[in-house]
Structure formats: structure tokens, C-alpha cells
View: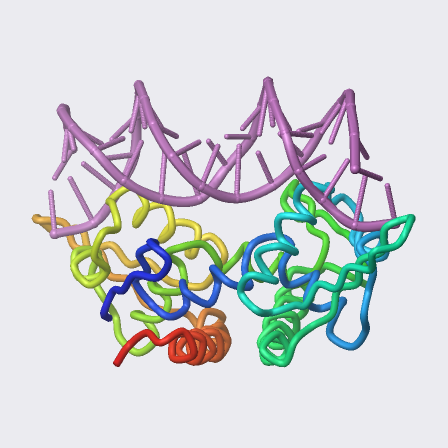
Length: 114
Length: 114
DNA sequence: CGGCATCCTGAACGATACTG
DNA sequence: CAGTATCGTTCAGGATGCCG
């Protein structure tokens, strides 16, 4: 398996590369919520309990930089920012769905959720 | 999305639960290599560059504890230990394959690998 | 050969406070 | 409302050495 570099970071396989874009604790939950609707910052925050402003902002910025979501700022008072998924981001949804289903299966096997 | 607890740890969604079992830097690469053959400790280690003994041992133990792989020790000198994937572990392979393919697609879009 | 025991670092992540 | 700034903590993972 050939190793390669991207943006200065070293990767050893495609799985690692994919997980660096959509992995971590928050990115999939965020993408999942944006999959079929536009949401404001405060909406996302309210919908994902326990996430801090810092984490939400950081993750949103990274997803935007990687082209998964679009950020639209309305220059009004009070501030208004809308986040939406891009076509590039939509391609990740089936993957997340696969992992999600697998997680549910594992949970059932483990006796969780009934 | 209902949160739940498992082995003392708090999870917020099925994706997080799944990634806690097969995620991280090393677990998928290990499972991927064991998917259709039995391997000895030293074989795996040789096949996954850059992994340390500590990491390899830790990950193998966790995968074993979660029922993904089986560990068979031969009481001989010098020591011999064989690792194989279980039926439970085999169910993870299609997931890894999906993520892998997605990673390859992302890499191609990013202009990596040609 | 197939590990385990220690020690250690850096990045991820959290808590809190503040602001245009 | 939608963030930033700063500080503190945790923990995955690396480095090194030892052993039956």
C-alpha cells in the first residue's frame, strides 16, 4: 500500500485519508443533519447536544475548506449564517449511512436500544 | 438521537459507536489484512509499516476483546501466535471496503495517485 | 518470536470568558 | 446571533528497553 502526502500530512492508506475528511466525533453528525436542509449555526448547535462553540466552528470551517459544505453569511443585525451541503458533500452521505447502519447492527448485537 | 452508555463510555449516535470499534489509525488496516488469511504477529507487523509493538498489541487485544479476531497461541519455542478474523469480524469488511473506495475517490479528486 | 512496562509528547478536545 | 480567544486537560500514540 503506497503511502502519500497531502497538505503536509502523511497517509498510509485510502481509509485513513477518508477518515481524515469526514471522521472525528462531529463531522458525520453535522453532515448528516445538513443532508437535506439548510441550517443556521444556532440550529445545528441546538440539534447537536454537548458540542461546544469552539468545536462546532472548527469542524464547520474544516468541512467548508474541504468543500463538503457551503457557508453563506447574511450581513444583517443580528448576524445570520446559513450552512448547506454541497454536491461534493452529498457523496459522503451514503458512506455515513453505511457506517450508521453497521453501528446500529453492532448496538443490537451488544444489547443496546430496546 | 438518543444517547447511551456502553462499557462506561457515553455515545451520542450509532456512527460514533461503530467508529469506536473499528476506527482509529490501525484497526481497519489490521482487519483488512486478516480478511482472507491467517497471519502471525510478525507478519502483520512487517506488513504494516510504522506501527509500533505497543500499538499493534493494543489494537489486536481490543479487536479480540470485541470479537473481531481470534488469537491462537502455540506453546512452542520460539513463540508462535496466529491471528484470524472471526465471523463477526467479517461483517466489518464490506464497511471497510465502502470507506476505502470512497477514500480512493476523494484521493482521485484531490489529484493523488497517478 | 511475540510480546509487556515505562515514560513522554503533541494534538485533539473541553471550559470559560468575551465580542461585533 | 455567531462566533473568537485563551487556557487547561485528556489521551492516542511514539520511543525505548526488557523478557520468557
